[in-house]
Image (tube, rainbow, N blue to C red; front, side):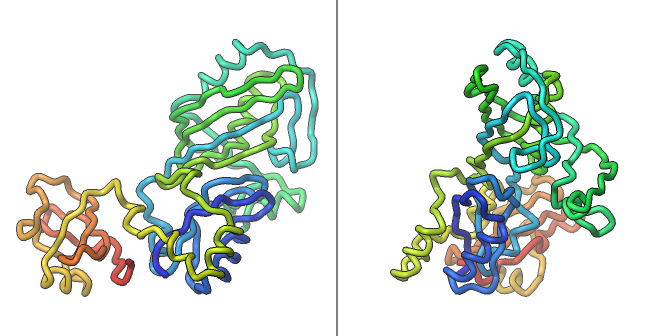
Length: 302
């Protein structure tokens, strides 16, 4: 199979666990995913099958949406409730103070990636260092918080629930930790669900158990989404049989012999389809030569 299946990742599964399960369920060798979720998290995890794994590093829509709950008055070494408690404190926060702090995190912000993360330092994953009691300096990086909405605040048990829309690379654990810091009482993540990724929503997902049931009835392909759906943000063109053969073989196409607008910007990415509507792959504009060059081929993708 070539395409993607949307899985609602269960709690206490790693993203690799889901990939391994889907490899077995689909009887497929080439399987990947579009973005790691922490084991404690649930939610949207697009699973890539076959030639769709080529899309892993070139996804145009990396924005994510999350529903997160965190507890005020506590910090942990992992910045979530699974970690070792580092501190506790009294909480004296009003809803107005909370809302003001949340508002201050909307926009471009700096984040220091947590030690318990898969980022690498000199080839070693940070969480491997952290598990050995090693804490190293990490450079901050810019991330974007597009939306941050307060859904619920329970001052009796000091819990806060928020909905977040953010850019790729945003750590929600760190966001909650930093909000707690700004409030002066600390905070740690207790629940996390990714509600949207790659343009797909949680309502589009099935569970691993659903996938097993469908596979047992030879119906799993009914949940397969075509790979080109990952690239809906790009404009599309249809080419002739001859152009299709040339493009598949790595040859560039003359812009003026396609339906591409002459004033198109350099380095614009285009979806390319054959005259039979089959998805061939992605091209990229080279204005210097007025050509559409190969960006990524998905020759055999459905």
